[in-house]
Image (cartoon, rainbow, N blue to C red; front, side):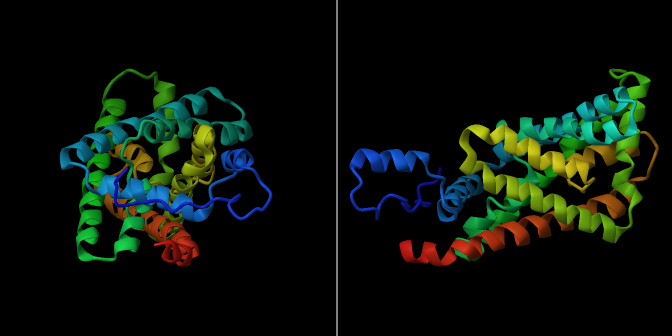
Length: 286
């Protein structure tokens, strides 16, 4: 982590009288990190991400775009082999979590996580240099993610790796990306951006349960059919490449409203609100 982002020390046992040093250490080991400590942990990570080499960001973002195809692949497999509609509706979204597990636990660059992580350094520094670094990071990650999703979608659409009923399941699962009007997709994207940024906020606090948090939060995204710019790009690009929708629909009905909604959901509902709750405490400890 970047050395500039020094985390303040917040000890729940520091002010308790009659507690031995050993007991204080045990209390600290068992205590949950408070909001300020989580904020500083994520900010330190954000500082580090802002200074990464451009080619490292592109490679990591491209890998994330490819990995996100697993969300459609595994979900499609579940969808194809579960006959009961109600069971399919509840069970198939578990497959959606696969891509996110690989991306998050593998530390690959995902655009929606970056609506939180680099925003905290921006809110801390509030200068043009950091704003430029955030814009650079967002541009590189989004570009690499989208190129990766189109490459993965091309492989799904133009190879015979999967049997016809799996391909049909991919098509059915992907239709929601372009079926709604602009305003509906935008609102669905706000929910997705909010949930994924919340996931990023929770991860530093859970330690050994990171996979569980990723699964729960991304399952909710799939269950609600919320619009995610990267996972949804695999689906919508697949429809375009199979001739089920047009490139214009990809841009106008999916990409633009989803991108805007994810940014609003991640930066406003998570980054700004969570920064606001700890800003005074951080100022006191600076």
